Amino acid sequence: MRSIWSGYLTFGSILIPIRTYSASGPLHIGFHQVHKIDCGRVRYKKVCEKDGKELKRDEISKAFFIAGECLKFSDEEIESLRPFANKIMEIQGFCKMEEIPLLGLGKPYYIGTQSPQKGGVGQSFLLLKKALEKTEKVAVVKWVSRSNEYIGMLKPEENGFLLKQLLYKEQVRSSQEIEIIEADLPKDLLEKGVQVVEKMSFDFDWGSYQEEYTSQVKELIEKKARGEEIPREEIKLPETRSIEAELERMLLEE
Image (cartoon, rainbow, N blue to C red; front, side):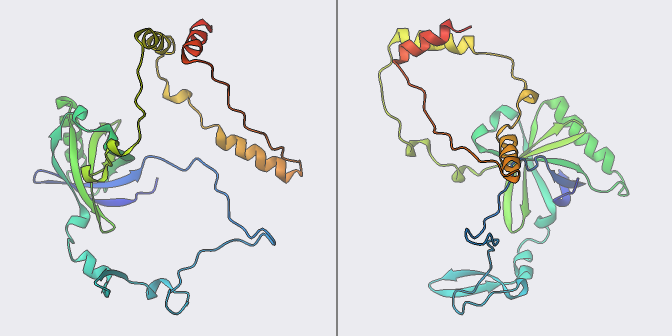
């Protein structure tokens, strides 16, 4: 597995050389965009809006606009802002996992050791892992990658650690922004709803879930390759009677 970031995890004054790996992989099929007339691939080019010239990578710079003035920055200038931080994942402290809001948890990563040649790596890595397991706590970490600063939750996972990126609180939108239609709920209707929930309750088995849409897309591609006609199915939504009638029907189903 190819690592996507390497650096040091700080456990107090202890530096632990680590590598991060993406814990998830691609699953879906990606279609190409083509010209309808001749099937030519659609390409996206980086073009200067002033002269219409297509730019090469070494002709592009990062910039920030203030009052119409363009302030250009080189990669070296940005790196010089926090050169040490770009290689450090700093443990801010430890807490119970229940204290981390699920709303803020994002993409998962695996954390492994960076180099077996560096003395004490395995022991310091194992020390932190066992300490977290014994205290039943997780670490809150902060690191810089690609000019952005991130926070995350680090927890023991099998032989290593699982890192879950955590949104900053200011990034999370308020639920007050969404529309919720108010309604009255009769007590007997709620009781039937609870009965349906209890009837549909089960022991969750993560491995039993398979992504089915991708296999259906593959079948569609194979049919197209064989020259078969692809029928267009009309979507018909199920008719909904009264809520109470639907609840009673669900309770009667085997």
